[in-house]
Image 1 (cartoon, rainbow, N blue to C red):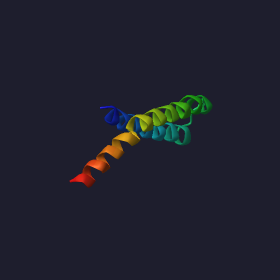
Image 2: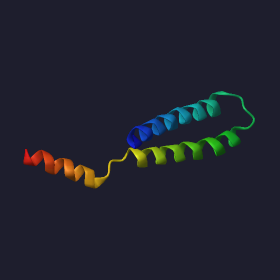
Image 3: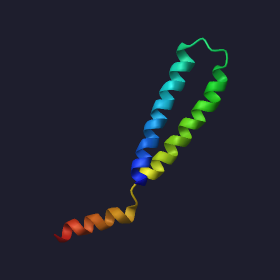
Image 4: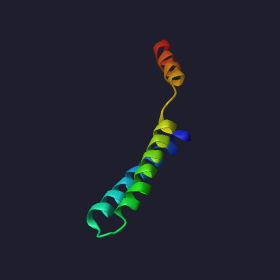
Length: 71
């Protein structure tokens, strides 16, 4: 379940990064710095949390490898 949540958060980070870049580049917004100050840390936070949750623990990988070798 945590792995799926991690994948979902990384997807949200990608969508948010796209939205921030597009809005900063193509719109004639006076507050570009505000968008970047809020958007970039949000993307980084979501990406880091998503990757940490999606990461499979090492001991689980080892158990799977041992189980497949015994068969």
